[in-house]
Image 1 (cartoon, helix red, strand yellow):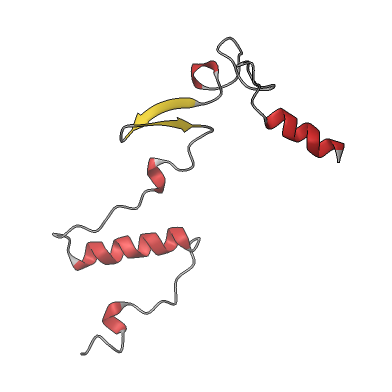
Image 2: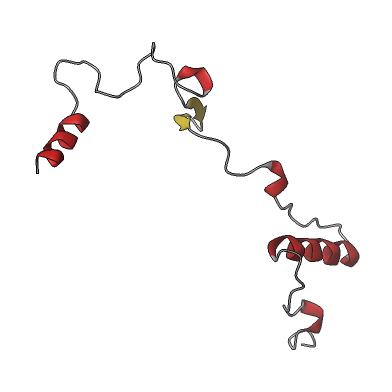
Length: 104
C-alpha cells in the first residue's frame, strides 16, 4: 500500500512551482534531438512531440493506382504486392477476371 502512495506522490505536481522528480529540464542531457530525448514540431496549428525512431520508411508506402495505367501494370503491381505481403508465396485469391461475378 505504501508503494501506491509513493507512486501517487511522484506523479503529483509540486505546489511550489518546482519541477517533478525525474522530469527533464533545459539543462538535463538525454539522447535524441535537441538534447531532450524527443522532438517538438507544429502540425495543423498544434504543437506535437515525436519520440523514438520512425515506425515506417518510404519503402513501406504502397502507391495508389493511377487512372492511366494499363492492365499489365495493374497485374504486375498486384503480384508484387502479394509477394511482399505473403512472403513470396503465391496467393489463392480469386482475381476479378476469374470471379463468378465477372460475367454479369
